[in-house]
Length: 250
Image 1: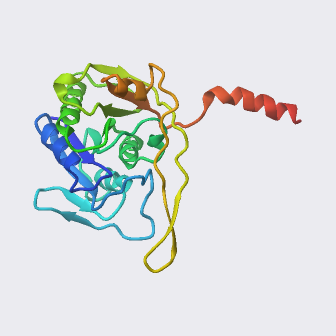
Image 2: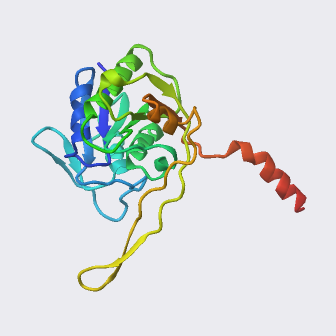
Image 3: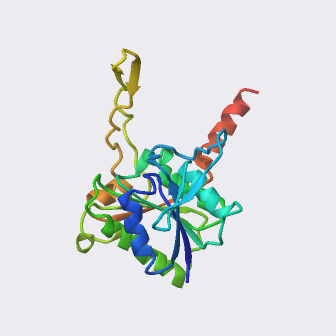
């Protein structure tokens, strides 16, 4: 039976990871190692200046005082690591589409799995809320079961976003590319109760690219979006232009 390392960025007590665990344990052996708190927006950050402490909870999950990336690293490349076949991260309680993936701790946990040489999946709800985790959990469990029967030979992370609806209302699955967003609203300027100056991040920007092949379009149309993400961030299409520009300066 396939062995899965399951993590997230919403924290070890989040309902999304619990729903995903319950679905995945029907098709695989699952070990859960997740942050002890919400780490949304942590991206690929590592805890380098404080010791990591791991605690086993009553439900068998492991809680870590670190980031999603720390959790996957502990589960795959440390004295407590166990052999696993795949890393799964989620279920995030809101979308991770377009530019969101640059900041997402959910995606970062999957990226760390891929960096360790393992197939990896990040899964998020296509809408904000806690009503349809079972939908996303079943989608991922089905994909994992299919991957065990016919391994997917891709050096990539599968970034999955699932429409915020019941499973029977899903229209299907589309392979997509990342869309784009407007920049976020201006940061909110305020003062705390002691009169000290503080800032809060404003709302994220609305999407600007909803072409038929984007993740935004697939979710809006009721389809599961699967976007393959590469660890190689090189903008290959611009290398010739940059080379020509440098040659002109000689």
